[in-house]
Image 1 (cartoon, rainbow, N blue to C red):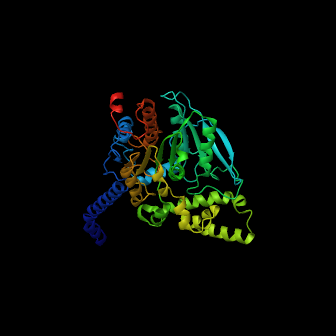
Image 2 (cartoon, rainbow, N blue to C red; image 1 turned 90 degrees about the vertical axis):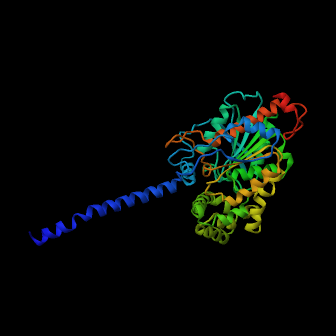
Image 3 (cartoon, rainbow, N blue to C red; image 1 turned 30 degrees about the vertical axis):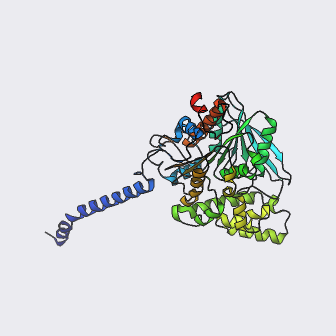
Length: 431
């Protein structure tokens, strides 16, 4: 036997076993990473609810079953807040419909032109009443976004008229008519839309709905002036952060990749601002324009953009002042209409420390219900069996279900109950 043949026979018995072991270790590692990243071992559960025991809240939780039943996301990826958020951000919704609406233009006192889209109901409301949902989308969003279109179509079919604000500067084909765009908490455009609806439909009652940044705006709008709550039946806020000042610290952390999400949102804001550069910076000196644009190009976070650009639209002297005055945390305690606040525990954008605000509010005020789901990400809340999500989400069903329950309560409310929060025997007698 040659030396070469001897060498081959000497090493061959051990090599297959070694490679098999390495393969098994690699597969085990990949499976472990998949299980951890997809959070597959996480349980499913009903939302964690904080509320006071009132007749209205008992009725709402009995009538809106989604709030008390288990929320079950798609099995393979739905327990990952990152994948829920990414799918919402990329697709918005699956197979989204195309509701037909009319675009309205509202001139503002400062020369700006607010726009909103109006969608008439596709049938009678179950109570027979005229009900309008006034909707404020998330940051840089508008009525043409898939998640808004899906929700509007669902609400229309349940008998609701829908009015959807287009954030100032968010629509690429609508030019700005003044040197400002939407900000974190400016309520002027939303107030203008609500005023139009109240004038155009004097018999309608309002359901106020806000998504993410829109949740901050609608809660701030209602709390700024109690007159804003007239003809409002209730308000629903989904996935907002409540305090920009507290949130800015968490947005610079890498925990849950918030710093990365911050970078992505800042990049999107840059594109919106640059698309309106002539309207926003046209009245400034060339030196000031160059300085502002230079800071904008180099910004890597929303806070840098807010400090260098956004806060100046309303003359705020500092970033802290801007965040303080535009956050709903200082106004939300003035909201007395029924208020549903929804957040997800695995939302990568909203840190758990911010959720002490709705928890405390719901524990103190009888008109507030705070619902916290285990899963859902940021505005995801997809439902589905294994892989493919359904077009309608848990969030869509909760908002319409809660609104239906409020309308039903108002319709059958006994005469002796003078307001939303009254207790007494009348409800039992009615039942």
